[in-house]
Length: 164
Image 1 (cartoon, helix red, strand yellow):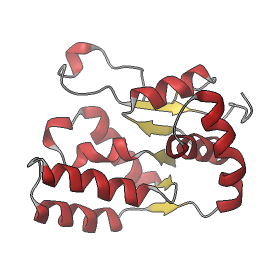
Image 2 (tube, helix red, strand yellow):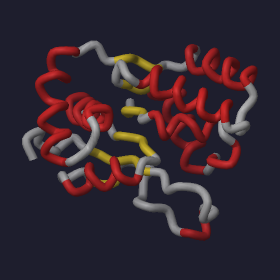
Image 3 (cartoon, one colour):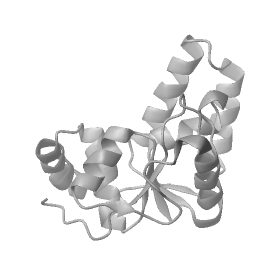
C-alpha cells in the first residue's frame, strides 16, 4: 500500500500532467491499495473545481473521474486523535501546511511510501530522512519527462521519527 497525495492523483485526469510515473502510481494503487488522510477527497474536489474553472477539464469529466476514484481501493484514515497530536508539531517543525503534515504523518504511521508530485512536500520528507522508495527516483531524468511536467516522487518514510 502507499499513501496517495492529492497532487499524485491529478495527473490521472489532467492530460498535460500525465507521465509514466503517474501511471505507475495508478497501477500500484490498483494492485496494492492506498491510504489517504480525511482531507484528501476535499483537496481532490478543490483541484478538480479549479481545473474546471480554468477550462482545463469539463465538469462531466470531473464527475466521471470522481466516480472512478470511488471504485479504487482507497482507504481514508480514521485516526483523528493521532493526527491532531502529530501533524501540528510536524507542520511547525518543517514549515509545511497542516495538510502536508497529515500526509507525512500518515505515511510514517502506516510505514507506506508517499506518492506525491509536490516538490516541497517531497523535499521536506527527504530532509527529515525519507528516501526514494520502490519504483521511485527523485526526480526523474529530464529526457523521461517534459519540462512542463513536475517530477513524481515515491518516498519511503518508514524509518522517519515523528519528532525530527
